[in-house]
Image (tube, rainbow, N blue to C red; front, side):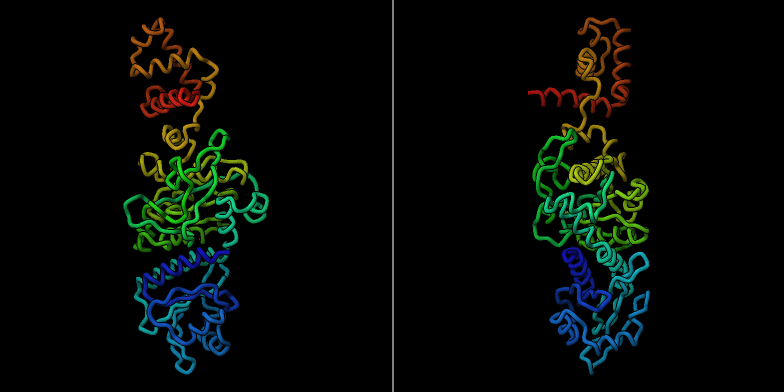
Length: 414
C-alpha cells in the first residue's frame, strides 16, 4: 500500500549518495530496493530476487548488533557470503522499530553529509512504513478511489482541517511526490457554497484536476535551513515533514501531492503551531483550511489548504502560515463563490450604497450626490455596512474584497 512513497524516497536518496539501498521490514523481508547505484553484491542480488535475506547473512548481521541498535551501525564485508560492507540505519517511529535501511558501502563509507541525509530520510521512510495505510488511504480518498465510509475506518471520523505545505516557486524542477506516473486527483471539488465546481489545480487556481506528477510544478526542496535534501527531490519535502511528524505522539496522516505535503488534522492537533514548525523545517509556506465536519468534505478542505498556501506565496504578509478563512480577497481569487456578502444581501439599499461608494473610489461627497443622500445618512449607512460585513472600509484590501464580491455577485447572477 505504501510502495510508491517509500520507493520514491529510496530512489531519491540512492541517487543523491550514489549507493545501492534496500528497505527490510522487522522480519527481514525486502520491502523496497533502489535502482542500481554503485556496487551490487551477491547478497543484494539474491535478496532482490527472493524478497528475503538468507539465514546465514542474517546471522552475520545480527552478530554486529543490527537487531537491537537504535543508531546506524556498520557491518563489515564477508567475502565468503558474497557480501560487501554495509551501513544499517534502523527505521524508528514513535520509539518503535518498523524496519531497517541498508546501504552498500563496498566502495567506502558515506561522507558525514551523506550519512546525515540518510538518517533524515530514514525518519520519513519509517513514518511511511508505520502510518503507510493512512497515507495511502488519504491519497486514494482525494483521488475519489474509495468511499468515505471505507476511509473512515483508517483515517477516523469527526471535524477536520487540511494543512498543505508548499515550497516557494523557482527552486528547481517539479517532483512527483507519491511515486505515481501522472495520476491526477480527479473529480470536481466542492465549492465553498456546497455546489460542485471545477477542480482546484495544485496551485489553488480553478481549472484542471490536481496532478500528482508535478507537471508544470515548482521545486520541492528539502530542509533548506539545515542543508538537507536536494531541492526538487521527493525526499526533500517528505523527509522534512516526516522528520517533524516523527516527534509527535500521534502523527496525522500525510501524503505528498505534487509540490505539497498534505496533512489530515482530525485528532485535535494545533494547526497553527504545527504549521509554523513545518514551515520552518521545510523552508516553505503553509496553508490551513477551514474546519469541516468530516471526510465527506475532505477535497474541499484540500482545495482551501492548497489555495491558502499559494496565497501565502503571493502575499508574504499572510505567511508563513495562511488560513483559508483569513485570506480576504485571495479567497475570491481561488474560489469566486467563497464570499457571499453575508447579511448585506438582505439590505439592497446598503449593497447599492457600498457599490456606489467603492465604484467612486471612496468619494463620500460624490456618493451622497449620486444617491441623493445627506452626508450624515451616508456615513450611517457605511458604518452599518462595516457592522454587517465585519470589514473595515478604511482597509484597502478589505475594500477590494467587498468590491470584488459585489462584482462577482453581478457576474454570477447572469
